[in-house]
Length: 305
Image (tube, rainbow, N blue to C red; front, side):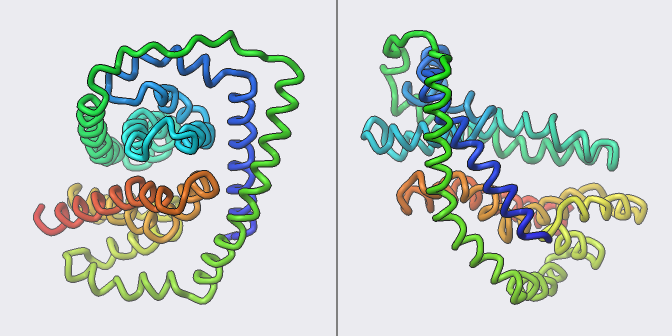
């Protein structure tokens, strides 16, 4: 794993997100989008956060910057944020599947890719239904609230300059906070902490019903999912049941999220924007719940199907 390249990719993506978010704010696009997306409030989203699902599809960083600002101003509560973020996962998952996941795996493993995509969509759909119900009860009577009137977006050179400068400044502050944390995780990997964990888990996976090839997939996916994908083709040739392959993929995804995804993908979106308590809660919701779901589904499929 090239950690310098990974670091530069993360920092570059997040700083770009800060600049994009600042441009959305300075030009007034966020306010305009909020007025246009207000009908989403009927699905259980706070009226001031209805633009978050749309922003998630463009820039998750922009969505969180907007939400964090409203949270600091006391216009929303943490629960409002959690409801909106969880509700935004379903449309984002659909985009991820048709843009990135299925174009790679569908030609490689065929229908199994679709089955696995549906397994994950079930989780996001259930979350969407749950938080929508909670939101509708919480905001009962306010879904029809009118959004404040704002002028059309101001796409002038001045607002673009202000947005870019503000985004760069906020991005620099993020880099100062994120760099020590990233260095700490890399140190753990360098001294073998991650490999030690996967080695210790191998006997456990064996007891749960995973064979040697499936365990190899899981430990490989924990480090590099693209490399592990090639093993799925081998499992198909070996005649391993589809349920076992799906279960193995689910546990591999859980291991990747547990050892890498939360700190390299999710944490950068939250760090510097929210208090530690909010950051920890978002990580539990956005990483902890999917990890738990994938472990339960994966072990169930392998052990009992």
